[in-house]
Length: 190
Image (cartoon, rainbow, N blue to C red; front, side, top):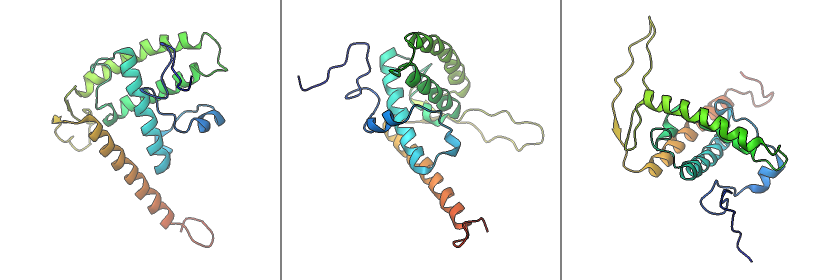
């Protein structure tokens, strides 16, 4: 048989599951935490795409409603960090060298994570067909926060691509600005 068919409870990495175009890269290096603040522009793009694929798989596999996993999760850092940690936990739990009970631990932790996701979704105000920035509490002495308004988003996929492009370009510009401060001779910051 030429075509791989996953078992019913196994993610389909060749179809609707997480993207593993670089599966050989994944095998060479164990899963590791992602510090989104420190990624290069290229790594940032790769991590966003990998997380997006996994979140899509997670949503479909577990039938998660928008009250737990809204379409515009990528625009909310609190949701991104939670989902990134959950993704890493899943990768480790389903690693072939992991203890056989690790997947049960992942599911226990997933139940707790769903509760946190619900709380953050409710606090942020993001919905199935619209989004808004997460409200921020202004501390004494800070400038007032700008008004928070709902924005209708017609195409989630298009919004995600645009968002990632903007994030990667901003990171690339920051990298280039840093490199311009380096002395060409010594490599030290001037």
